[in-house]
Image (tube, rainbow, N blue to C red; front, top):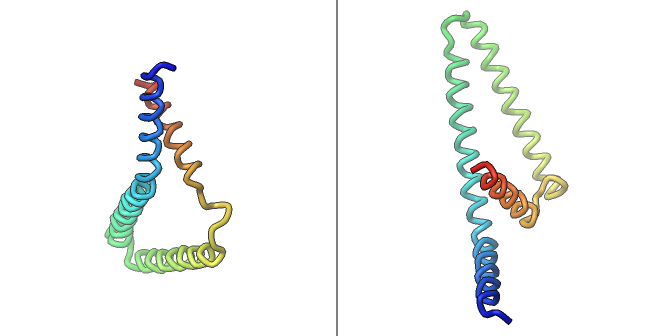
Length: 111
């Protein structure tokens, strides 16, 4: 058997193991930045929406109440999802790996 094939196989296995061990950290980091981006965007939009001087103050008050209700709805849905536990919406590590590999392959084809 060709020794270079064994080396490539070992390297491939080592890379896959490194990817598997790094995946949870990578996912936490990606999730952190997604949440941060959404949070910043919502804050900026909300600030502009609620401080819009081109509409009467009564409209801004109604907007504030609507935002408050929207926050309540999101909180209720988050509690319901947490109570339901992991289910159809949870993603397995294998599914994550497949999606990342698909994205990498697609980016290589486009290059």
